[in-house]
Length: 450
Ligand code: 9MR
Image (cartoon, rainbow, N blue to C red):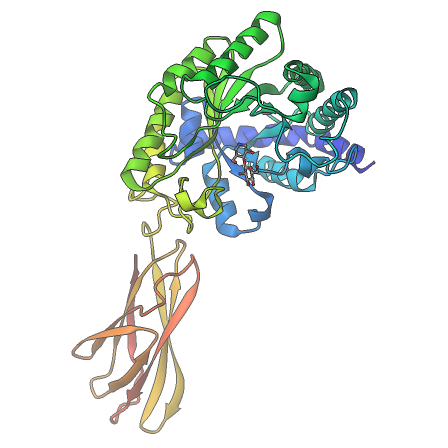
């Protein structure tokens, strides 16, 4: 019941979605200073995996909305999340991501319809015929709900074994339905949403090896027999054990030559600094060199929420600062305004500003307490400096929440622990002054920030 209501309401918003996407495209033509707009300049999308639970965090949402043109729900469209008991679909979390993406004019990748992992417990015990029925019903339920709203679906995920054999991975689908389950899933998916690109998605298939050869043979077979497949997703989870392969571009190209699009679907590269940046450059350059590589998705916005957070594999650090890898990707996409470039909207420090205001908070015959409040401007700041000029007779006996240096009667105050301020946020320092016969107020000079 609720699914049917939701289906109708999703379809009714489709016109608005198209309008939002056009606005985003028009905007992106103006300035290629974000990942999404720079990629659009190359005819590609630049996406990220998103978790619904983080959308309420303002820095997360601001970084997502500013930089990316496509989103993939990281877990919310998986079988356990969407059909936890048979025939009972729940789309609350996935809808939250799709609604957010559409409000920002972003596209959505669907991940994933048929996968051996994150299966609810009711699926595995089913007999062959029942499993086939359940698989097709799951595909129809999910794709029907989002019909016309998903640019590409990972129809089948990770169906091949790791290692040298090139064999299919054991799973309820493989073990009970045999090799034909993949073809059946793609045929069902095509009928469910003819507008969506249908992808096969896997990992450790990024270079030429036994596993990617097996996927290649399957795609070739599908194309020769008219089984509906449009794209192959290369997850691209890299680290020192699994580095960016030297034949990455060649591998993407050989799949493209079969007549399918290729997409980089879950990119992350463990590491830091210039080495990580150089690896990201290789991946972006490989995609741009293959005309059928239609877009790239990184597997998360910030290192702090990565599934491999210890490996710091993403483009933004835990405080949403742009890492060197971000600048490398932006520049490989032909964009400008990476870390350190003036006016870069995501670069703390550029355009940093603050104001300082003074109030007397306590007063007695021989002295007073003063307080200076520092407020960051439109950008976050990591430090500030304020000057306070005291009347000549007065002297300061103590100061807290700041570090003073003196030149005559001019005191220059820098932060002690309180340098970092979010945009618009405030901190203050205080001091006790002896009047020594002058009750005049001190003057607060300019506040500078970095
Ligand atoms: O990033 C996902 C993580 O939050 C989940 O706990 C995990 C569960 O299997 O799945 C992660 O995403 C995987 C993706 O769906 C398929 N390819 C590998 C990804 C990383 O494990």
